[in-house]
Length: 297
Image 1: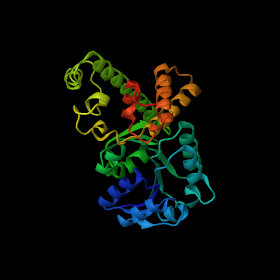
Image 2: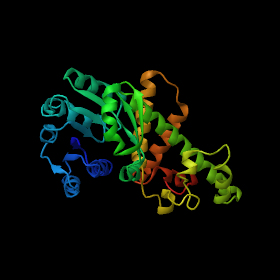
Image 3: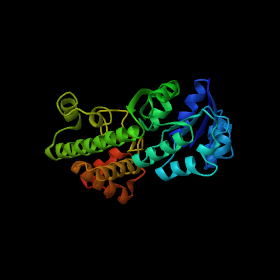
Image 4: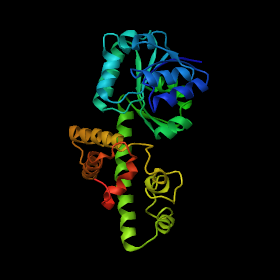
């Protein structure tokens, strides 16, 4: 079993760390938010008072942080991961961040003699709690194989996407597809409402026909057809609109930097910005159907 230093034990990191402990690993945890750290300790983690203390004895370091600048700070600071981790430690960043940061921090880790993977996840809080996340992993093949048993303790689908930063590439492309799909599904249901077509009837047709997609079949944005979807809980978030907007902005920034044409991605970003700016950032991203109806924002 591995000694793991886990930095960032919030809504996603907390259950991920718990699943590692359930698998028999020893987890030392650190988070700047005291209540989050307290919850991890109550679940069985060892308390660390700093990043340095968290990673000093770790064989594996895992981070789950909000944004690229947090990743840079945690890894590159004077008492950060790269200067505090022991020789041979494997670094795994599960944050969703920009490709440039992922690649530059991985390069700095390599210069420090450490292997690093970017391994963002899909599956939301429910997937983190159930241990069914999808991991999209960028980095060297050998490092990926070393990390696989740890990732399998937290997820169901583990995909090696190529070199450093490619995990982040896959994550932003996937979520751009999801955002565009959810808007399309929402518009279709609103049109059906106007035409007098029952929600369930549209679902019964489209979920088995050419309109089927994950946003419809697994996460239907209207109450009823998919009982587990947030639409049945007043759009209590599994994946917030704030987080979707963040990912869309990452995708658009990458598209501009690399000269890719993504007109639907651009429109999706604009629509989610409207939804979030209307005060809905903490609701589930599928709740954008309410804005499409004209109910909100």
